[in-house]
Every structure is written in C-alpha cells, then in structure tokens.
Image (tube, rainbow, N blue to C red):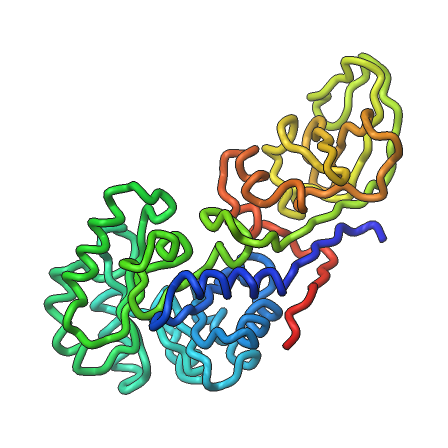
Length: 349
C-alpha cells in the first residue's frame, strides 16, 4: 500500500503505566492522562487498554473528550476534565458523569448553580500561573467548597522535568500550605513529578507523556513506529537539484528516494535538511523541502532500495525527532495526521 503505517504498541503503553504506577508507591493511585486523543495515538484504543490494566481514573482536557470516553470505559471509571466547567458544558458533564476540575471562582459558581450536588474537583495554582485558584481566592471559598465534598484537589508542576529546579520545592510547599488538613484526596504530579520522588506523589498521580514513550521517562518502552513507503527512487547527477525551491543540490552523483508523507501528515517542514529517516539502523538524510505529501531522502549509501523508511521507530523516537527541530516529543506525537493506516499491537486482557 502507498499510505504510511503508524504502529502503536498498546502493550508498551500498559507496561509504561505499570512501571510508573510502581514508582508512585503503595497508597497512591495511578490515573492515566489521555487528553488530545491519547497524545495523538487514539484514545478509543489506548484508554480501554489502560482500563483493562487497572487504571480507574482518567484525565482529559475538554468535556467533549470525556464524553467520547464514557461509553468506552463504563460507568464506574472517573473521568476528570482539566479545563473545568466551561460555559455550556453542563449537559455533557451531567449526561456522561464527568468530574470537572474547577479552576476559578466563576467555575465554582457555575458548577454549583447548574449542577448542584454533582461531582467536582478543584485545581489550585501553586506557582505555574496558568490554571487554578491562587491562595487568596482559595481562602475565600475553601470553606464552602470543602463542605460540598470535592473529589480531588490538584495542582500542576511547571518544571518537573528539571529535577534540580527550585520551583519544584516551592510549588510542593505551596501545595501543602493550600491543602494540608483538608481531608480531600490530592494530586500534584504528572510523569515528571512521579520521577521526582515520593514527596510529590500524594494520593493520585497523573502519568501522561511517559505512557507514550517520551521524556522525562527515559526508561519507557518505545510505543510508536511510523514507516513511510518509498514511492520511487532515482539517480540525481552531481549539480542537479531536488524539490521546491531547489534548496538541495547534489554535490556528487546520488540516489534519492521519494516517500509518501509530508507536512499534511504532521511531518514538520523544519526537518528539511536536518532530519533523518531510517532504513533499519542506517540513517538517511532528508533532502530539500518537506512537501505536503512527499519527502525526498538520500539513500545513496544503501545497498538496495528499501520498501519503507522509518521516521519513528527503534532507531529514532519522538524525542529525537523533536530535538532535530527544536521542539518536544509531545508536539511530534500530537501532530501525527489522520491519513496514516493505524496498526495496534496487543492491549488485550
């Protein structure tokens, strides 16, 4: 077939969750973050596999994401919405028994007025200055909120992927100051926080990017392989140029393969001239521009024309691709386009 193949190892995702669960320690529940369609890999397949493995709490970004998950996970699973209770969300929250993480006094008021008695959690801002109530706002409403029985008090670490950053200890201290003595379950740590150690774990951890094989969880099992089919290869004589704008000119006689993928598939244009595809364990430099549907690659050094070349795989993960274009593995994964044939490996009981 001419379309690229994206292979997603559900068994590896489950194993990564189990390892992070073990690191979270006894007495701490490990949730699973499956927002953004499970970081681009398919929440409809990833979340049920994690549920079968034992995950009982899931975090999504948007109410609509939670609504899509509920039929797949059943009524007993808790689905927490990180954006909280936005205007107009009440029907979906109620219909799908979602737990919004309320981020402000306005959200608290909206939730209490439109869905009195419905489950909720609270997100607190311990220094990231992104979402959540800061200490003065929290102090003003804590009595009423705690009396209503929140399911969870949570916050988010800004610099957890830098273990020595002073913000980690400062946010931990602020989280204690805001939540100690409340008697409510607490959550501070995503993947990076889990790796910071037991002091950061509290009652629930929220492994996310580590499930999908990316930093800062360097011991993660690889999850994704993206194989791009070679449409044709051709000899390019010294002095001839390749692709739009003639941005690459052959310094010597070369063999150039054209593969079926491009920026419409989430292959970033900044990979032009600096990225690599792989034939097994042999790197093949990307030449010229990354087009909408096509990439040209130097295969002069290969003995035979390959049927496919890997952008992601054993030799090069999402973090390595991200390093080549100055971004992070999250962006590489979530940019994976809809045109790939998807193959899921494992994930059964």
